[in-house]
Image 1 (cartoon, rainbow, N blue to C red):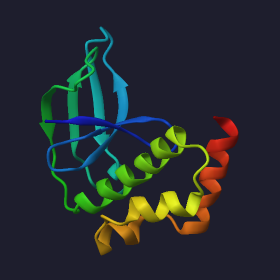
Image 2: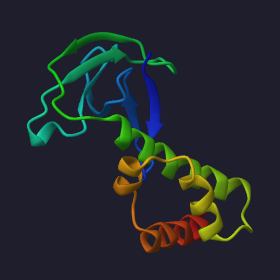
Image 3: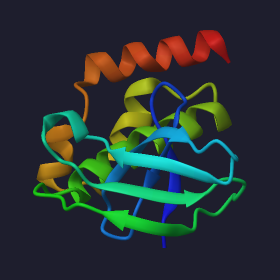
Image 4: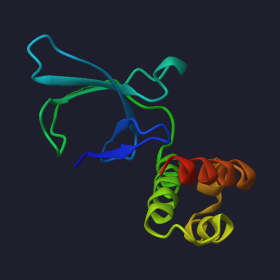
Length: 132
């Protein structure tokens, strides 16, 4: 079952059963279907998906193309950043390094290598706190 995840820039992205991430690529003229393409579409990954437009739980109605890249580590890294952001919004007084250390405990090496560096995450946390 596909789910929605949020990017660092607060854009909604689609994550399929195989943990590949898709970006929104538009809507049809009657506004009944959403078009999505692989997040790495411009690097030669031509996979695409169509979902129903007004659905809080995405229902895939069409899928084409294939992925020649692994995805689970990339999705785990993205979900970890989202959990850091939600933890920050929930507990505003905890230091950024504590939040990062807690979130990274369950990551494997491949996902950890795809994460942003600690200084970049700390900077993002400062920005999120200022705009909250």
